[in-house]
Length: 141
Length: 119
Image 1 (cartoon, each protein chain N blue to C red):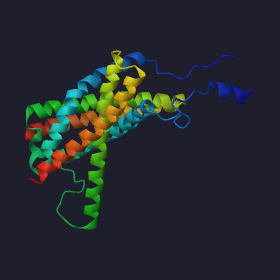
Image 2 (image 1 turned 90 degrees about the vertical axis):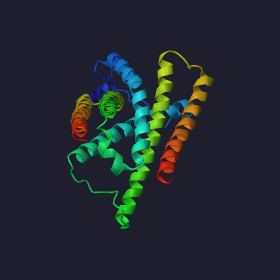
Image 3 (image 1 turned 60 degrees about the vertical axis):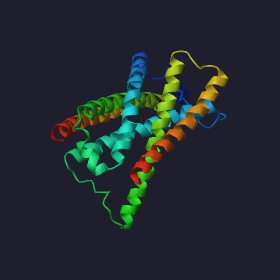
Image 4 (image 1 turned 90 degrees about the horizontal axis):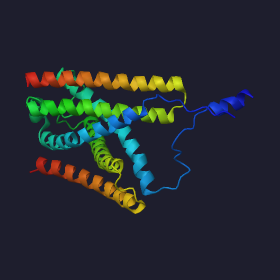
């Protein structure tokens, strides 16, 4: 009896990721959430980096020109994290604009939504590539 | 049989609207962020210390930090409400994410003002 009662009280937990067939709409929706959480913690981490930098609290200088293995590994990890954050940012940005169009009632048709979803994915990869390309172009010219 | 409704924080529509408003505000701020990132990455040690000395950068930086953390804390609240069914735990995590957001925003704004004044 008490067990039944507990089961009734249990709230239904939303998106069950395993049981649905994958399509563009669900993929972009799931990645919108994932990139959102990633960006939230990235913003907090970068903010605290700026705060520590402002008060000259030493967080370990990673930009020193030194060939010691730890520096090389850390530089690689920071570059990889930067690219991941950049991609998350562009994906969340593009898909967020798609969400805003949905909010004013545009682009709800199944075909339009799928096309827009593919466009968002392509555009976020493209913008990431353009940004990294521009950074590297300025760095090595 | 009586069905109990899932716990709610009873503030859905207001937060939904505010999430959209902050999303619109973030569009120009993100464009500024990407352009600034490209500029600073050319020579971080040269450009970053003086970056916030320019009023436009200090203003946009403060707006970006506050708007993104506001947007982010609403988003985290929605996700916590969706995935944590225990009401006590849910409220604890929402409070924790709000405290984290507010503390970070205040500290970052103070830091940017300091960089603006000394830069």
